Image (tube, rainbow, N blue to C red; front, side):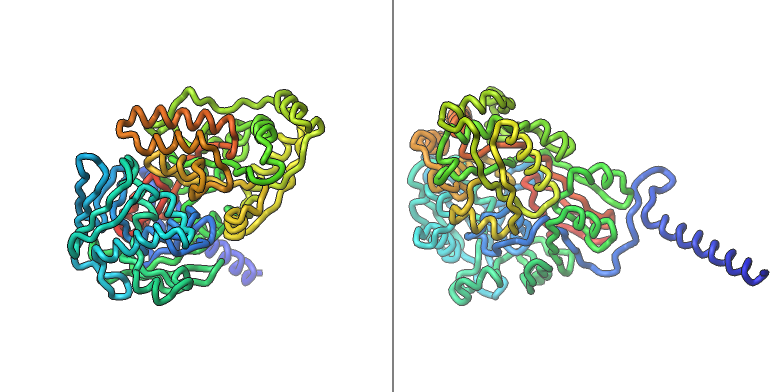
Length: 515
């Protein structure tokens, strides 16, 4: 009996000690401040992404998750800071001509690509020539459609001539159009370059196993501020519950997206820092206007009217977003509050369908990616549409496959958004302009005129007026149904220092340290 009592007492003491030790690494300190988890034993980062990057060649990329990796493999001619100001990158300075039709970029000297080849003006010209090559069908081609020619002035000076004034030009270069790939590597690897990318960035590509991990390591010869973390492993977690579990359990150090239901929980976790920024992008539903049923504008309008955006924000997103009326978020200088969020009107939707010859409604398939919140949003849309007699069939598709199907117009409707750009042109022109990089079949001559005029206007007030006209037309034409503007959340362990949360949602790790 004494032995049994002793054993029980020992077990209780061990349990108490274990609980105390666990508490030390995850609780608030005496002052109520957040405490860090135990210091990492390795100078590495594990990053949890919301999907597996489909494409590692920035000139071909159309996905936001690709860009999370790009920020650390590639450098851009210019970049942005936390205030969304354009700052130098590979171009240390630039000059704009008086007529605003030419830009001279003065490049950093002595920069090497990861394969040891030189970055210089010739490399810049090669990159632009590639992006402007119509035969390649690159998404960047439409973004750079105003570029006339690229001239090498000397080894480290390049001059870009535009066909016309183009106010958003510098902002375009803060994203994939400004990312410089190694000409030598592209020519040697061909299509395989996407599986073994080579840039000039702070981290070099090492290896990748699709749907498992992507590894990059520190570029010891980096030309700028030396990266401090030895390596970064990106892991895809399309399931938000799995992503959050791996993060809170300690296997992941930082995640690029937080499920709405987990925001408050993580904010209250003393071992975690949650950073929030107002989003500059939009989320919604693409409608394929080249095929039935959405080649019929009346049916697009009817479907638009059955959706209760506020309900989606309140229920599926738990207040972490705001209903959207257009591609322009409220924080943008081009936002116009006269463009109102569509109100739900089931009876009007039925009336429109009846007049169009569809009194009993219609049926279509909505493609979504395999995420819990996407399923919830899709089910809500399905239920809302049913009230008007519209049958929505939901098809779950792997993210990369969905993008491929959309590129080939093999869809009727798809739930997909856009992470946003600092200039509204990056949101609107590519979405609504005929042949735009994220336009899947929509074409309207009047819309093209509005968007081209907004691009060429010099004064911001004039550009805003053109965008107002474009957004009003977009609400009438409905090639895309805007649902909401989401806030951007990043969550990381307290032992991470130096992380700068830029509102473009992209994670840059050059200045990050692990304490």
